[in-house]
Image (cartoon, rainbow, N blue to C red; front, side, top):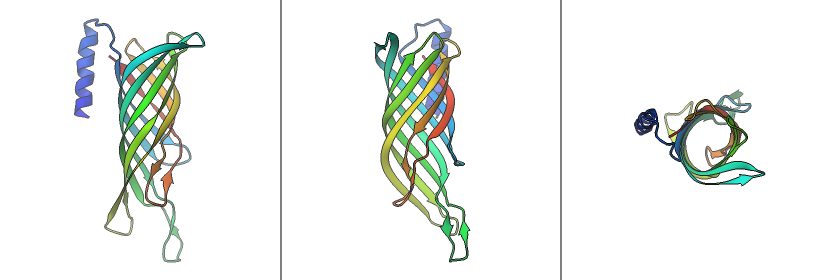
Length: 186
């Protein structure tokens, strides 16, 4: 996180001198999963690797590296036949690599997408036990969204992401996430 802050400060200094924008960018977003009380925080850095036109509209392609953390819980459990209790708390963290595209609709709006893979570590803290259980597994990342350019360097992003994360050997968190954030183009 300190490195991300240092990169943002260096980028702000470069843009203050009127430098030509570079193909690199960084971003951060927060989100929540549909029909679930979970939170997702994601930070990413990308580099534009090419562009083309799609139906007469300019489209850019980028490679992104991301880190993320997700808070969720396991399913309801039976407690010695006396009823149910809420799920156990789970914290997942991970890294990923994505192929991202942006289709420029006009000077302010763009449609965005990303497709890639991730590797996540999910740690379950059991409610009635002192032990924690960690489960690590790879998965896919997919998402679509929109971006609104606030100024030449900063864009507001809103997207829906699908990032299934295996919580343990029996459960998988598969709910889509609605996120919003900011992206800074150097």
